[in-house]
Image 1 (tube, rainbow, N blue to C red):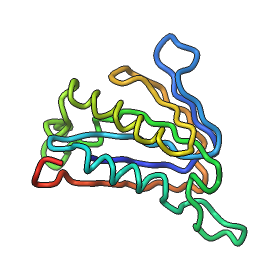
Image 2 (cartoon, rainbow, N blue to C red):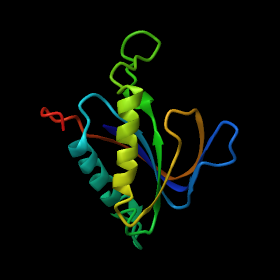
Image 3 (cartoon, helix red, strand yellow):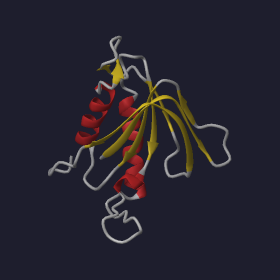
Image 4 (cartoon, rainbow, N blue to C red):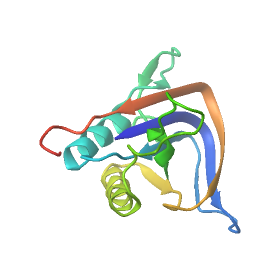
Length: 153
């Protein structure tokens, strides 16, 4: 499971032909992708890491606060291209990205697991072409990854 996160002042995702799907103020944009073997253990680790990661400044400007501590929000957007491999050739290879059906199930479970915390969660629409507008703060962008455990998670 891979999640690219960006600390933002605000963000909004729309789909073709819609006026708005998900929108947040201060918080995190989480682009999430899944691979074979991802399951509950990887998702629990990622959820816990995401909501408690200290990447917001305290009064002294040091990165000591989490999205929970600053009253921030999280915008979750599915992103199978996080598993695109580009080491060979010029076209990305997406074989490591989980197939649509299983990935969609994990995506919705991930959003639900985040909703178990006292943080507002907005989301895009799984499997649809979307436009993402955001105002990075910093910018601060990090890649979180939790490889599937041998037991299948």
